[in-house]
Length: 163
Image (tube, rainbow, N blue to C red; front, top):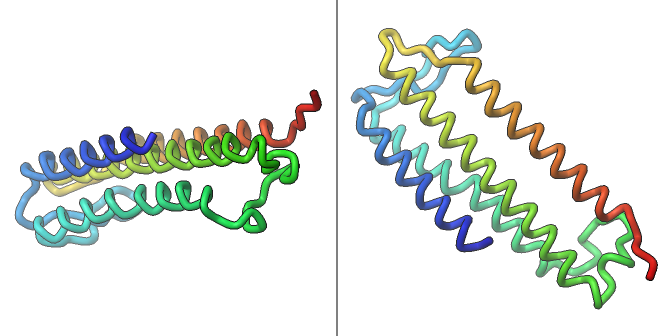
């Protein structure tokens, strides 16, 4: 999972760098609710900010997911905690939680890359205008996947398997 995350992170950074080549020297980087550009910044500053965001946010989530396996057990809150964190199940439980966190980090990376692509497309129009529907769709899809993922994780840990 770790290798996959860092591969996707490198691809995301490469995508932002590559796709930023078509941006104007002054980039519309902030948009009002109706999609009209209302904030601008130099291209270099926008690219640096976006690459920083693409690296920082998913890496933070990834780091938190990896850190969970190193936390004292008293800081881990799970249904049926004693059962799932018993020595014979602890490694598998923590690996499962870590894998979920990595998938969330990958999803966030995808959302950020799509948002960047929409900003690039908006800047190709005159005047710049951000398409709202694709942005809303990708955020809604991410949130739906997140809620479904949380439900699946909770469902798994709510059940205690008695031999």
